[in-house]
Length: 577
Image (cartoon, rainbow, N blue to C red; front, top):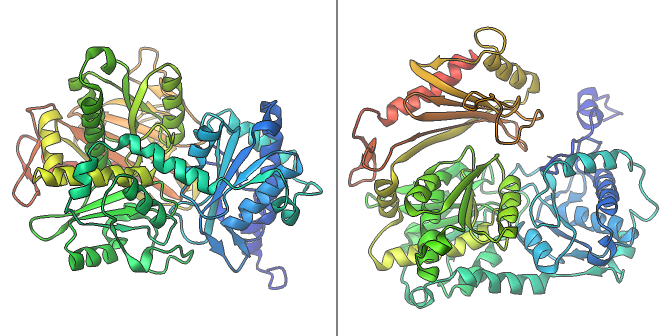
């Protein structure tokens, strides 16, 4: 680049150092301080190690676990495995025991290992479903959950103080021969499969089920682990999409390796399912911490469920399984909790109100749900389930993060159970909405690479009709409340101060409408996206929608789906035009 005088590329690579936050690091692999490479991994791990030394007196007794996915970037020589080995080398050079997986693993295995072995922390080298050139460095704390403030700031400061590579940081060969290095792969895989069996409630039914299920790992790590999870539940193995079952960092069959994108990622799965007569498709993202589900409808078309719809289905199912196991005594249900992020559907709240358990919402991201779940568990509470609309589900408290592997096995049993009653997932979702109230949501995003544009957009919302004034209506719909978790403002609170934690480093504003609709606009912490989330909720018996035989939405009462869509787009364009 220097020889070619490629100044813009040089500026992009060396102009600004990657910022370490609660999501750790995520950036393109390549040269320079703004990219993921050997040097920036060493610097990051040195800072992380120094911070751990400040926080834990028993760090050298307990140690750290490191996992990695299958990502690789031949042009720069970077790969998840290479970065994991360098991280291990840094920690071992300071006398810290390291549990380094010898092969690729799903992200959930790292928090599981921390809890199972009682370690101080963990690192997962992955960029999840990001484009192929990206990689990431995800950090977990001793409680088994992702880091939250103030740890992110503490680690970031320690990185800046430890930029010069330590003498043995590069010595991966020596680290791999060290007595401080252990491979937890076999033990953790065995114990994980044993642990998730606690959530298997219909083993005999599973053995005899004739339901056919297709699974795709979308060129990621999930294949062998989902197969093992199905075996742990005595479910028949799902049909694997041959072209996508093996890890491939090029992701050759998809534009984006993200099953949240829906049909575009599932084309090969649809074809295999039609060929084999399967009616359900399960899809993991490349690091297997997310799960998408599609079901063939009576019309012959495939329905890809949204993350909110799957949250309703899995939450309902897990509560039914808990009742089967524990009974319905009031003494036990008062300690039951479910969680979701604030931008996710409030369907769990509706179920909780009727059934008598507790529901809480947190800030966006499993780092908040995982930490809150740990707090509740430490108080003797039973956290059954947590979810976010971005197809992330925590179905077992053994992993305080989203887990697409256990979710796949639990979904497989759920599908088998419904099939034994001649019920489909779509029919069950309709029953849930009829019992607890329809919750209709529409979520999507806009791509924006310019941070100044994003900042201007949100500042305009905060100063819409003059300084410190938010919009009072949108598209003819009155806005009755505003919550801004960037500034800490919440018009619903007596002192106008938000209850949920605030963060000036990210943008997030929620508008509540007089008609019961809620809309949130926020920035993504890991992608160049402006995300929006809307939901319209109806009380039981006051449904806005019903289904016809093809499971399409029909107008029932005073609002309809087109009104919601119109509201959504008018809202966005009226704010930013």
